[in-house]
Image 1 (tube, helix red, strand yellow):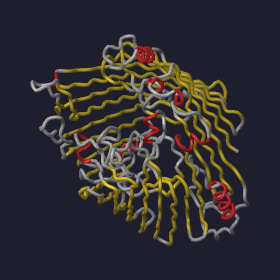
Image 2 (cartoon, rainbow, N blue to C red):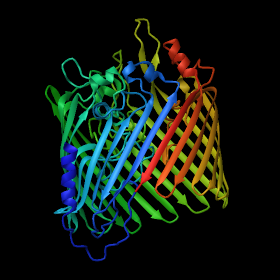
Image 3 (tube, helix red, strand yellow):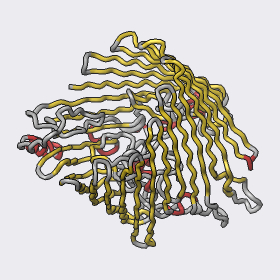
Length: 619
């Protein structure tokens, strides 16, 4: 009923007379990958066009997630559907449905209540508004301290560009919004007003408060996969009201103010208080305000953001925190150089933000709190040679908390240097080299002392990673790729050293214009260190740093992984993409703590076969 009413409203707005076209506007606007028009376009008669994407994945034998749950959740097929429609050039609507590799049967009721269900309607240039999105949407302002719409990305850009509100069709992030956002501009001024109310999943304490760190919502997809997930499903909601005002002094220079107030239907008060829970968000209300700037002085770009948060709740001490980041970026072709400084208080809380930080992935380094430091980068890019150097240095000034003893964990430290080079020796042959060193403090669990209590101790750990890669394009129809990679982890205070190596070979062949074949194989030997495959195509043109339905990392001695991809274009409107992969688990699992039951051990040790199917259709 709701969707029917919304659809009628959309058709009504779509039929209204268009606004007068501004002089000099380009008539050659094209749709981006997200389906958003990059430029204003003249009004054309009502027409319908759209796209449809279906994805399915099955992995056998079934993994531990299925073995540990009730029969009604033991469905082994991943299901995904995204459908988008454009009604004329100003109205866009669509939806996304997803059920993970484990979960209830795919029915309309189950997907709505226990899966991932998103929908959105976007209307451009209607009445007084330039842009309006209702349903699930994403925001990105300033340098991302208050709102950032790529929380799951592997590498964060040195500069975040403020973007227009857009529909949210992501399946891998639960950190965005659901409600209404409207945008209007007059001359050099622009304003966004938004509201959101979204149900969230969280385990409850006996007193009814929420027992979780809200930053975990970035990884929690809202999918129910077992009985415990069903108990935590939609147990509370977040309501947000906010606005954004900006002023553009020139084509590139701009300043902006952003503010948002969040209300939670239940008090958030995690039961755990030690280590990373020592300064997590606690309360029922949180406000975040931010001021950002972006301006140019010849070929130097200065940009940054300052934000403040304030949180409170019944029986909870009020917490306030500041955060700021500023960057200087020099562009002088073929070179670019930048330095970013940042400082985030331990009690700064921005549930939908992400700033420059020590690293994008990991905990607690992935969130803009409890760290200060700098990130510097240099890029040299010419057709035959590319070089990039990144250096990050950060200190986490607040101790993470107390363990089972009265000894606090000290403030921690981390740094990283990353270097990559690519040489085009000839037009068809590239050599690539990458090295990375990361120093960071980690916690190790000590054996019980005389009193019988185990405790954790903070020690320094160093990780070195190396990669060498060769790519050969003898013709436009075939491409060869070979890669060698190693990883070494050292903990000097423990006298420990873990290492691993992998070798990868890849062939891509196009026998016809419409058919593409791609085969890849990994051989690895890593008794203890966690190797990764690097970015790998998980769906058509969707790359991810972990293996779907596989190991998640290459670990064991010895082991292998291979996959085969077939992509076939059918006419100009339809494309079929298929991937078959096999992870051969190593026979020696002594270094991996997995087994709790014989059935689980057998499932883990067996070769795992995955089949991916994606069908895209455009009309």
